[in-house]
Length: 392
Image 1 (cartoon, rainbow, N blue to C red):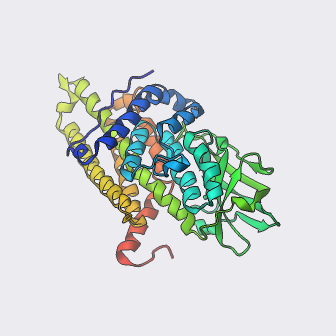
Image 2 (image 1 turned 60 degrees about the horizontal axis):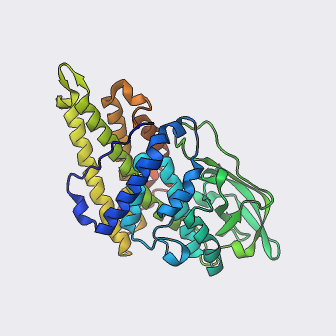
Image 3 (image 1 turned 45 degrees about the vertical axis):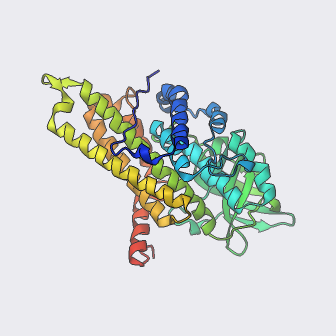
């Protein structure tokens, strides 16, 4: 088992912008990560093992639905707290953060925001505690960046509906107890509904042979004439604004989380280059290595300021989906670039499990794609500043 020596980079003293509660939350999650996750994460990733035993611990830690009100099992916390939690988890591994943000932003959030009171009281406490694991079904084999092209649909059958279709690339699905699924009704309107494991015709095949997010479970959702009670349909939302609202919350968490990947790669590169000697001195003493390190910490600092300001806007109810897109894209780009530079700085050791770099690089190839690809987020910003839709 490897020792987690991570030290948080804070070049602009941004901790001064945090409350004592924020720092306590962050330090509590960091301590748990170092004790329960870091020592085994390389082994889990190597063996494509999802550490399901950690799910109840994550619930106890409060990382599932931290912004959901306390009366439903959530933390009742602000968005800076949520961001810090995701940053600390993804600093260790993107797959572990995927588990947390799917549960909180893509499952618990829509049940809270769009669901009935009966749905909230039935599902949210068990999801918050980690007793139940949830997943989010939007992406399909032929509908990714264009979710309106989904084929999954349901038909009215009295007190229930008959659901048919499939979803692909679904985090948590092989172990999920409940799935928030988006499907078209008989009028072609996108609606959300809650599907429970055990409903006849509902299966969740696992996707194998992944080179990325190997400590996260990924699968499909298959619906073959599944009878879903009408009481499981969200009453308070219709149309694509439902799933897109969920994605905005999740992308916010990714903006903070991916920056954690950049921090971990930088921290590892800084430590390694100060210890590794060539030509009679530590390689950190050479100009090219210092150039890389200086650029890394500059981009990280800019990213820290961006996500902090975004969280303030989220707390004030002023943040736009377009601002969230910018932050998600920026953090992913920073993380990928820093991971690639850090891999070179570690030399041959950079491809081994002795260091987290290669695992982070592979994970980020998924994170830069899911919940809006790198190019899609660029076009979201482009449309926002020009007023011209480049998607059509």
